[in-house]
Amino acid sequence: MNNKYKILKETFGHDGFRSFQEEVVDTILNKQDVLTILPTGGGKSLCYQLPTLLMSGVTVVISPLIALMQDQVKALNDLDISAEMISSSQSNDENSFTMQKLLNRDLKFIYVAPERFTSNEFVGVLQRVDINYFVIDEAHCVSAWGHEFRAEYRNLDRLKQFFPNTPIAAFTATATKKVQDDICASLNLVNPRLFRAKTVRDNLDIKVEPRIVNGKTQILNFLKEHKGLCGIIYTFTRKEAESTAQFLSESGYSAKAYHAGLSPQIKDEVYEDFVYEKIDIVVATIAFGMGIDKSNIRFVIHTSLPKTLENYYQEIGRAGRDGEMSYVYLLYSKSDEVKRKIQIQEAIDDSYTQTGLEKLEAMYRYCVSNNCRHKLIAKYFEDEIEDCEILCDNCTKGEVEQVDVSVEAQKFLSAVYRSEQRFGTNHIIDILRASKNQKILEFGHDKLSVYGLGVDKSKNEWIAIVDKLIDMQALDLGEFRALKITALGMQILKGKEKLLIDSDKLGIAQKVEQSEE
Ligand code: ADP
Image (cartoon, rainbow, N blue to C red; front, side):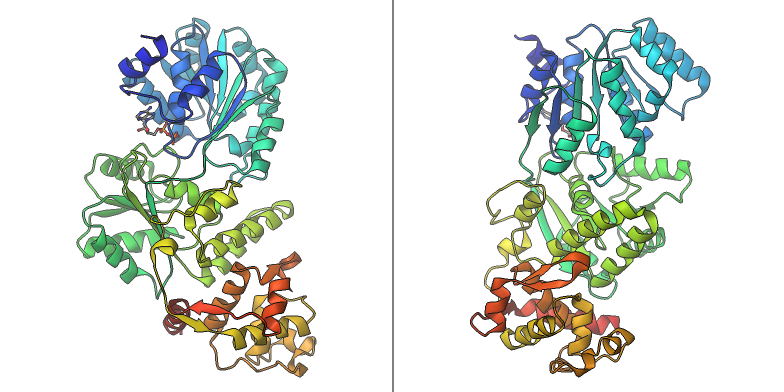
């Protein structure tokens, strides 16, 4: 038997390669640079671990998180493969000991954080050993266009400078084409081979709904429907993680909270309870993320709008890594968007604010869309796939009663038109609902003929109508999210096209409104 199949079976215990794995392994064995984009659960570790076992030197793996490194080192040691990590969490003595092992050629793998490459001493040590290739895990962190840019990753442009003959194998689960190009350029990859899996997880059943009140009834209903399964519930705040875990425990579920505010001991305990199935549910902030080594997570719930589709895709990707059917459920509200916006504006400097807001907008548009969820995600990552037909709420909901809101749409579009297509959704709704706020008065919009024409509809009902107009591209979002009328929008405005909306969308808008009152 060919060596690589033998190692696959005997060391890793797998009968065959998954898609792309063999190609990536071969490329690494051919000493070529490579960028691999495989969804979470696609089996990236095997791609870079297996070739090392057919080579004589050490493989240097650069990874952004200590927890990730620890898991990987432990997994390799469990397979009797020598691997160590050098990080700020080890003592100086431990790190020196590891460096010595490295120089003695006693290691197959060394895991390091990207900031190590700012140290000339460390680079000097590496130059004295036989390196098979570098692995850059979570390579999207190198790109400012990605969702998790890390400045330390920028140092990695030094790799090709100091090690021009050592191949680089970069991996990520999520990258738009722009991020993909940025990774190749930032790492100075030389004629890299690119393996990009289709952005689809065909064992994930996706459902997205507006959150009613605090979403607790919706969560309980979901859990009743998926009895006995284990999963993660992502919340917006630590406090919400705590209160939801408590509420679920009181409702008879075995759930614990996990967030960055807990002590390391408690975090380890919760993680182990989950991995060893002493509890079914972890209610967590995104602190519970990368590196969760549990392949049979059966559901992921989000209780509010994630920051970006990249985050969302990565978080839902933690469900069903073993390939079995799994369920993901997202609850959102317009108010989440407001909270996220504040977070983006506070947290990042100006150059990223605009990107952050655009990404948030795309996340929100995903939620309110009527299109296939899998297709929307794929499209965001610039992939084209067919409608899933069976794996998302939009594809499976069947015939829904339609309400004709053409007259409302005309009123809305007319207000956009009369205010010269320079304003965003909230302002237009304020015009229609006869608001007397300062901005309305300042621009004299209380004098427009459409002023007050929409008082019969609640704010949320108007939002549902606007969301539909944007989703069908009757309206575009311009700079500063000003609404612009498209050719289709003009047809609707002139009464030449109708606007129909799912009755449940309007119904839910009313329910949400009542719950917010
Ligand atoms: P990723 O890093 O891409 O999210 P992992 O490397 O953690 O994925 O692999 C996910 C799961 O798939 C792991 O449990 C791993 O053991 C399993 N796996 C990887 N490759 C194979 C394979 N060829 N056959 C069966 N299982 C595999």
